[in-house]
Figure 1 (tube, protein in one colour):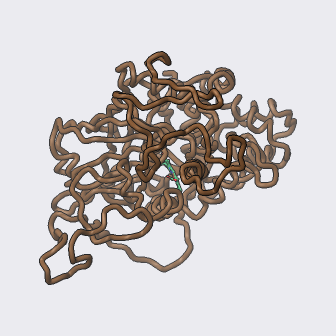
Figure 2 (tube, rainbow, N blue to C red):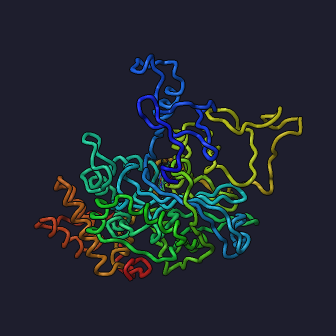
Figure 3 (cartoon, rainbow, N blue to C red):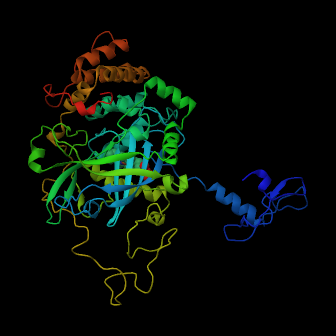
Length: 533
Ligand code: HEM
């Protein structure tokens, strides 16, 4: 449509009015009232004053004034796309989840990729963890696999999450930095939190500056459970493997790209999908039982640990294809609400203390962010299978129970009923122990896997890690924090710690940080971990 195609009229002050024609609808207020003039407010005479009775002006300004909703407390900057999940083969032997029963079946999905630290308007190529949140609209309700592009996490217990996020975001007095971890508070927290050493190695690696969302892996991080029809449980870790392989940019490239095109990752995904180059990932699972879990030095409930892929090969069980961009960014990508607690029958939680805390946090945060308890009425969040319940009212209620019965049991034969055999049943794990604020000793080794990750990197990738740490810690003003980090790194790799100290102008190496248990130095490099290889 060109400007010549429009029906235009001149107003009394020479302003242009676009007038409805045979192919263009009449503009209305939100109440449906037809609008005669959208260029001029109602005034006394041509030069005012304006009149408060102008309901059109008031409605338009009121709605505009309320356009913003709170950004996500973390992962504020993100970009989403629609697609489908296709099951490769039946997994009925390990899970009764309907989505894994029939080979070749396609299930609709929505994915949102994100950075963690930056605000909604921050730049795409910050050094940061990337969120990889997947909503699969199964026939048994929505399954949200709310993962990251790094297989482990900073902390072992949800009670530390607010501290972690406060420390990594802008410092409260000065309000910066807004999108970077290169500051005293972040490194202060990390250096006082030895459990974060494994994750920090990944964050300083090339993984944290991916070339595009299409070249990233994804991880569910926690150990979950599959439960089959016989109520037998198998532990499972979920991994997404990009069909395009993994690629990252160099730090110098990231810095330039952020300046030249802060929307680099958004543009890449938009262009790829619009041109028909649909990105694809394979969903892989690592399946294991309690005896296998017990064979490790570390605890499979500890989210700062991964199960090396050489020891337990990930099995591909399906593929995710992204083939359609949202019609509207706000309606879908901004309003989508992922929640770890959204699991269908056949998928259950482990006792990972981070996962248990997340299961509370996501519902709680959606109530605040999306303005009340009816956020599941927003189409992007609504299940695509039939659903019936007696929940009613609240702000923006659109799906109240129909008819007389809004409770059960009732004598009217109305409304939904329980499904003892088909409904969700939590796996009845045998749990016992004293009520206490304890951390298991099996969570105490904070350095072995950090070391294993570092030695699995190629020499070039290792130098990138060292350079990233030198850049980041070079921005830290407090010498004690730098020294504390070096003392931890001496447990990871002595050469790395020494080179970094040199780059930071530290002449004398500090004492090695005390380790809560022996650091394993006999671990093999993990070849699957390298990006360059
Ligand atoms: C987003 C809490 C750990 C992945 C969020 C949000 C909260 C939150 C409140 C904002 C959600 C929203 O407003 O829509 C927590 C807590 C954690 C935790 C309390 C630990 C106790 C993790 C971990 C992962 C993760 C370990 C990865 C495995 C994500 C992702 C999003 C997110 C991908 C963005 C979802 C989206 O795209 O909308 N988290 N989180 N979080 N979190 Fe976590």
